[in-house]
Length: 289
Image (cartoon, rainbow, N blue to C red; front, side, top):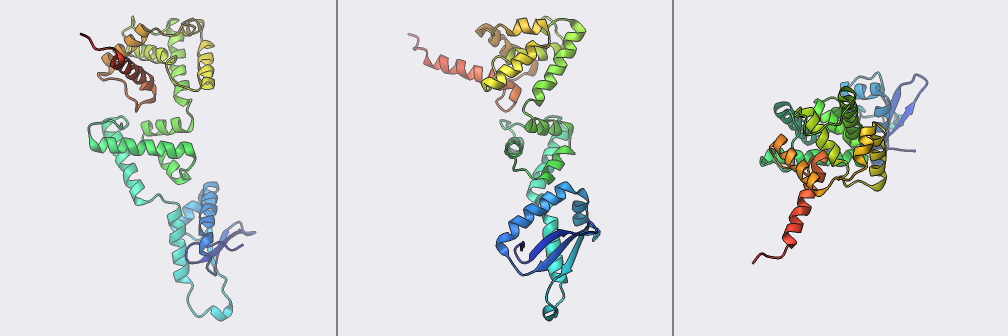
């Protein structure tokens, strides 16, 4: 089978020397994307191939002139250099993406938090929207392995968000670990009576579990997991929070964070939706005379 980028046909084989050989031959433009996918898969499986392409070393990649002897009048080097550049470009995110990623890193390093889409700063809001788009790319499986490597080698907060994209239950299980440690230390549920910030945070998170809009299967799985952690949790979660309890949860959130809950943060979405429901209900009330 002939596989080629835009200007040249290539075929990748593995020989007995365990080196990858790229053969240049006749053009086959429509097969270029297949080669791109093939090379990306090889680079993901063999990091030495990626390193060789990026460093221009022939140890893992070899170019062989497969033309007929009658066509050997011109040097193959221009074609080889063109193919080399093409393969290198496959393993590097484009400059625009890298620019946005570096801007994200700089923002997180300076602010020690992730950007939000609802920020008053246009720069932060733009980064927040871009970050959300990266999450969609990860969850859909369309993000390249090379871009994923950048997310795995960056600031802790960005890595944490990346892990959440890969595993939607990651944050839930991290909070469960914190809650289990709290129960082990105090043998009591976190609550507003305790003015410790950790206790207040865990209490707000626990109250929010009933209110989250999850699929029935996910909701049942999470609540079952929490109930099995401790008898006190089983008793607490057997009761759904009342309107007044949710109202107090919003009050406590605003007091702790100095702002209202945000739709841009997963753990705050439900309180924000509850507020939106109250606003809609208020709008439906008959006018006062």
